[in-house]
Length: 344
Image (cartoon, rainbow, N blue to C red; front, top):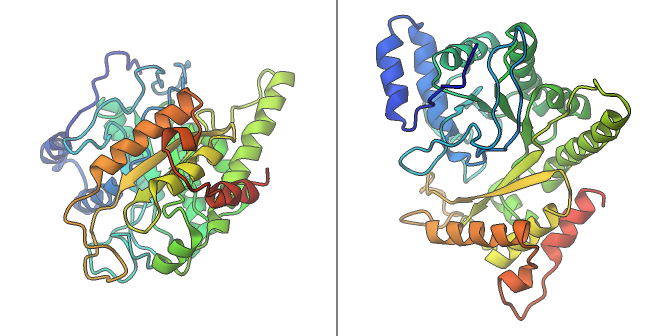
């Protein structure tokens, strides 16, 4: 399928146009799920262009083009939507205070089957509405059960449908090494969200989680990428493993971390060659009833922008945190925590 002239839609209204025009051809149940799960996925910001290239192959569906990338279109709120950005399910066993999909929230819930999600992706892709898939999920049953379903989606797209577009999968914290490694065979990028930079604050807002379960799959991804790099030097046809590397996301403004705390952690993560991007998401007050959270009238977007500017200096100009943000306090806690967790 030739996609060189593809024009991904740039605004969420195109989703609505698609639903209105093709809803008569789509199962109403699937359509309802799509609306719910696309809405639930919008708070994850870690889906910008990776620059990866997956060239057109004979018998394969489409290609991923580097440079202009697959996430070059943005919604009116600045969120990238040129991928089909969706959750497999917004049910979740966890009750994280900062998350709209927390277990205790009374919100519309839905779950797509593997086949439903694969079919939706192919349908959107064939119509040139998207360049690929950004897939996350709430955790159901346990991390491995959820991760296995995410892997099945990517595997079916690649092997059954010969899908050659971009795939970004969220790696579920606590998932086994075997499942993370299998995901890396089919995904262009994997990401594990840190969410809250300091563990004591994570425990305050998400008592069922810890940083160990986040850093562990990060380490699996890192080891897989580095091993694959060496294997490809020896054997030409070794399949690529997560060619676009890994990324993560931190929430800004939900807890007491300073910009310096956040940047120290980001700086340490960038010391690992497989970490391509750290994303910053200004906290949106979605659960205003929870008194553990700050009562923000609007997200701290200026602060978010300043962090991205400082991040750019760290990545491209090799600035140190104390140079990017002057401080009398040399706090290395976050940096040392990351180094220890990733085993460096």
